Amino acid sequence: MSRHAHPRRAMTLIEVLAATVLLAILSSVCAALLRTVPAMPANVFGDTAAIDILALERLADQLLDDEAFSERITPDPSADFTADWPDTPGRPSVRIRRIVPEASADEPAHAWIAFSCGNVIVWRCIDLPREIPSP
Image (cartoon, rainbow, N blue to C red; front, side, top):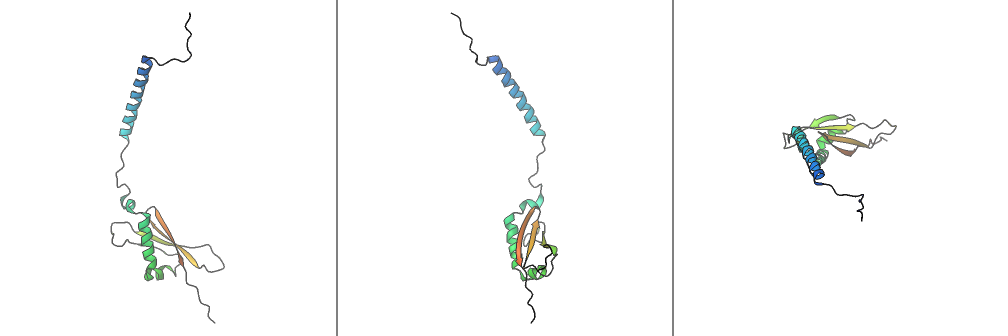
């Protein structure tokens, strides 16, 4: 009787050892490359990392509730200024801009205000006072 050669055969011990050696070499090269990558410090962005969108939203709402702020932003269609964070002197200041809408025949009833600090932007819409026509 003759033995039939099976088309499928298992890996030999030498092939397993060769594959293991190749994997060990590849992993040591990868580990060496990963060690050369510089680590980023935790505070790479400074204080802007501490700015979250919820804190900026609260500040925007507080400023819009303040009458002095409303009197400053409402009449000037191209207002652009900065404000400091209350009770937090280490944070960068907040840039406040009133966005000028496209020109139209009617006077706008609303205006958009952008509050930005670092890479975080919060938008708020304010109602503009209507002119009362004189009789």
